[in-house]
Length: 225
Ligand SMILES: Cc1ncc(CNC=O)c(N)n1
Image (cartoon, rainbow, N blue to C red):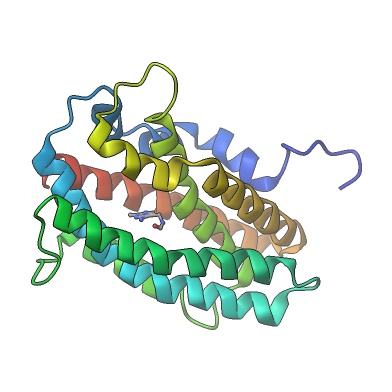
């Protein structure tokens, strides 16, 4: 890494290269509506019930990345980072249940929305043993970073996020989750630097797919389509 500044990894270059799409995922109108307080509560409830389904599908994906970490990791640190992320999903699922009851949202018998289903299928395709670790890490970082950047934006000075939604924003917008995302980015960058041109090309496409799915997920929540 000599001669390179901390901010100059492959991921950072991809974010700059695809800034329009990245911004589309992290500054979506749904997020902006939370931030300015104009959010439609039925949209928020739709997001809540659909995201609970997504997170349940996300658990095996993170587990599959953990498995790859155990097989590939040189120093054991990345295994611990991913294990920490997986462990926090336990708490997150419990949080969804209590949040849903607070909003009178039923989490059983939810109809899985098309955009959600498509995203979950995409996650499934990334769980296979043949998917390279660098690629899976890129996807994991992008999935987590989208939420981190989006919800952190709703907590910045000047935001008018309604008090009853601030806890949701803090769940992903908090500094600890930000640190987790930075750790994931570092690990992903480290493996991308060593990856073949073919894997690097595939990882970039995967990053774009994640961002597109995230935009569709927000669209579904925001407009119900
Ligand atoms: C659609 C989507 N993307 C990312 C996250 C954040 N990761 C885990 O919670 C999420 N909950 N939902």
